[in-house]
Length: 260
Ligand code: COA
Image (cartoon, rainbow, N blue to C red; front, top):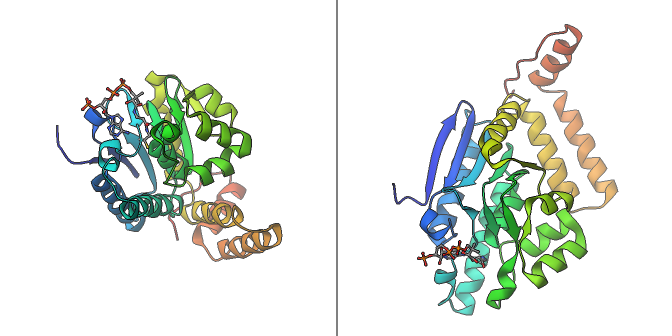
């Protein structure tokens, strides 16, 4: 097996990125954070990639957290820098101009749940467990967990997960709005690929518009958010894909979107 922290493969227009440290349950060390940052930067600029799936290697874990062995010896300044390194990469994922789906194949703990939460959609195997167990290490989440979990699942769930530190199963995670869908573990890859392929066939500029509106709207008041949505909506009328989509509907045929 390669010792690269990541594996990448293409399934048509879908890029599958796999965190590849199965012997450490895909824990995020600095090298893996940097490799993910570079991989997402490249995927953002590659017009041939229309959707991304992010997952973890091996049968047990999506990502079991930030690398505890690496963190053990960090100074306060290095700890702050490690947090910034993770946050920067995850913000890049969140702001990707194309859909990113977290395929949660096992433990998504600490930095693993934080990584999943910055993706646009999350599909979990029914065997997966998610949580923010940093409290058990005398730590708090440092890659955006307190903030993104709060926005996804609200105060009660965030305080519970971060203060109690116990993992929850996929079904409860779905009930709390942390994951979009739970599927049988054996179906996870096929179901995720099906969804990613569907998104890869959707209008790229409209998808980007949705992602941008949700990212902006999550951080501002309703008036500003509505104004942003209106501007994006208007912008869609300059695209070939909008003409194609509406014309295809009227002609009762399937649209072919090109991203222009
Ligand atoms: N950082 C570094 N190494 C990790 C890790 C992490 N977050 N999570 C797991 N590993 C390593 C283990 O140290 C072990 O390595 P070793 O074989 O060299 O000793 C290997 O991955 C397998 O993990 P292990 O604990 O033996 O598996 P398990 O099935 O008994 O338990 C977990 C699985 C997920 C419950 C357990 O690994 C765990 O609690 N991990 C840490 C979760 C965490 O606190 N994450 C937040 C970090 S901020």
